[in-house]
Structures are given as structure tokens and as C-alpha cells.
Image (cartoon, rainbow, N blue to C red; front, side, top):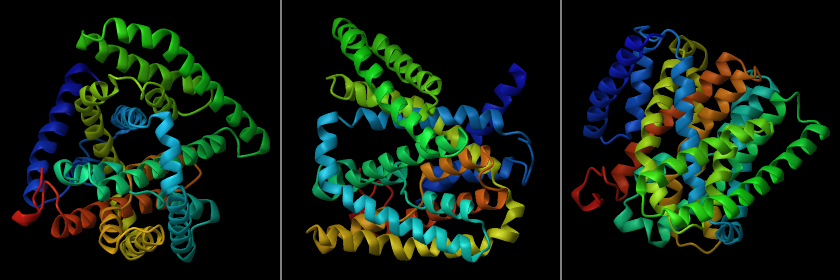
Length: 389
């Protein structure tokens, strides 16, 4: 692709994203819906202006790397133990229920067991991006409802990390005892390297030059991508390396500044990622997967809110809080798309299973956004009394 082609491609993506984002905001939708719809329109299934979205997809995955890095920045090691005690069993029990839901629907429609397990794993997660985007920071983020929802999302993201590890094992030739042993050695080794570098190199440098914001920005990007590359050398995924990089410096007093400064960069690459998701969606596969996708989406909105409601009620949460958290978490996840993409890339699942996960996740994003903005305080709420910044 020439420089002129790259400029024109970026023009199409971001100009189109701006137009569809306007429509998304007018209809109270998440901007992610606009990005994916643009990908479908410009991709091979419709206009075919992007016949090969592999380069854009690879670029967009940097957004997921930054997303996991920023997630790690909010997880101080000492806070992890508190979070585990609070929401571990809720996240674990709900994950089992959601996986069973995905496996059951997949098997009923003739997918093999491997594809059914991948579909089930993809259904375990809720969207961190949509959950946080529709959470009014001035009202809920610092209140109990927001804390419960965010803690569950963080636990789900940790489950996603484990799922990516297992999928990484499949890419290495199957999850055998030897593979698991190598992964169990590689992960602690990467953690050790990260915390040693943070303690003896990063911490002194950041303390010495913490007044130079441009320097902090450069160091943060270099640290994130450096750990991502190092993780691949340890036979782990780049996303896992980025997550560990964030956790390693989460206790630093400038972690909050780094998180805020990297958000625009993360959003740039996430536009590319979700555009690529739409571009990779084979609209012709709807002839095969439309019915199971609709059933699986319906199951998400029936089962996820009720599951979270009863599990949170069991922990002592009020009826109001448990229902609101359940509704806000009733959708698929960007990690579902990432998991599906990795599984398809390693040929664990076929095109129909890949399209099923994509269609279900995209449709759940649309319906979930409407459901939340109609009932609860969000920056996009339809009713004035629910609109909160």
C-alpha cells in the first residue's frame, strides 16, 4: 500500500466514522456501532473498497494492546486481592453460566465441539468499553453501583487474559501438560522481568523527569509496546505483555496521568480495530448464522441480567443495584471479538463460527446501548432526568 493509498484509506475510515458517529449519537448508540457499521459498508461484503482488511486489523489490534495496558494501570497489585475477595465467585459462576449458554446454542446448530467451546468462551465477557462509556462518571463511577460493575468487568478481563493464555497454548500445538507447564513458567518469568525493570529502571527515571510530560508519554508507550514484544518472545500474546506492563507501574503516582494521556491514542487505534471487525464480517454468512445469532443474542438479554441479579443479590446487594449492574453488563465484548479473531487465525474455528460470534456481539452492542440509555443515567440518555456527564 503506497503512502497515497494509506492517506486515502485513513480519510475514508475517519471521515466515515465521524459521519456515522454523528448518526450513532443522534440515535443514542455507542460510537463502536458506527465504527463497525462503517467497516461492513466499506468492506468486501458491500462496497468492497477495502478488499483486504488485514493491515487495518493488525493496526487496530494495537488499540486492544493499549486497552489492556490502561486496564492494568488501574489494577494496583494490592487492590487485586481485595477485588478477588469481592467478585471472584460472581465472575466465575456467571462465566460458567454464559459459557454453557454459548455451547448449548452452538451445538444445537451443528457446530463441532471445538467451535462450540470457543463460542461459549466468547459469551463469558461483557464490554468494558461500552460499560464505561455509558457510565456517568459524576454520578456512578464513585458510587457503589459503579464500583460493583467495574470490579466485575475487571474480573471478567482477567478471565479473558486466562482464555487468551489457553488459546495461546492451542496455537503452540494444543493445551498439553507440557504446553501448560511452559505457559506457567513463562508468565511468572515475564512478571518478574516487568517488576525488576520497573523497580530499578523505570521508577528512578519517572521520578527524576516526572515534570516533563512529553517524556512520560514516550516512556509509557515504549514500556507498553516493549513488554508486548517481550511477551511474544516468551511465547505469550502481546496483549498479555501490555496488561502486565500496566500492572507493574499501577502503583506509581503518575499512573493516572499516563492513563489519561494515552486514551486518545488508544481511541485512535480502537477505531481501526472496530472498523476492521466490521470489514471482516461476511454478510453472506447471515444466511447460515442469522437464526443462531438472534437466538444467542436473545439468550444474552434473558440470561445475563438475571444471572448477575441473582448472584449479586446472593452477596447482599440491593435489588436496585443488582438489576442495574445486570442490565449494564448485558452484551458481548471486544474481548469476544479478539478471542474469535485469534481462534479463526489459528484455524480452531471456521468462518461460520467466527461470523456467529461477530454478529452476536455486534447486535448485542446495539440493543444493549438502547436498553441502558432508556432506563439508566448515561451521557446519552433519552430522558433529561437520566442524562449525566
